[in-house]
Length: 174
Image 1 (cartoon, rainbow, N blue to C red):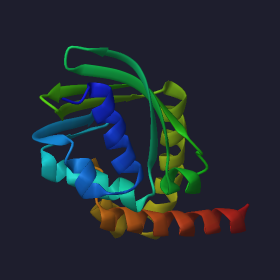
Image 2 (image 1 turned 30 degrees about the vertical axis):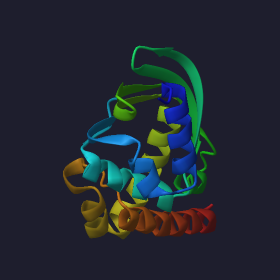
Image 3 (image 1 turned 60 degrees about the vertical axis):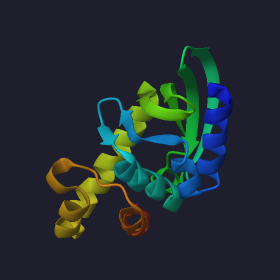
């Protein structure tokens, strides 16, 4: 039997290698994955969208295990990805990521961003959205219908394209 720490570190390895199917193999079918106050993905299909999004954005997670007790593991973490880099945020920090297990599979993940990372992302998103709503209003509505951020490989690629255009427009104006 693998320990919770071994499972999380193996998941991290698959995630960072952008091996979506292997990363998903560490989850139960009813996985619940949430970013506190931002979004919740329920079930393997919704989490697949998140994993494909992260793979398309070249996401890299670094977990620092803090505590393991009875089918739970708590850690801090840092993340980098191409989306963040394009908006000028080199790395974000999570003060807490809690993993809950059912057997040898992850059944629930709750992530909490550090305040300074949440602020940096909010600032970047606001800057980009102001520009994008003016330049591509229909597309933004398609990427964020009813203010619900959609995760998937196609959406990630379109965001990268929009961010490159935004950065170019910002550089030309500034």
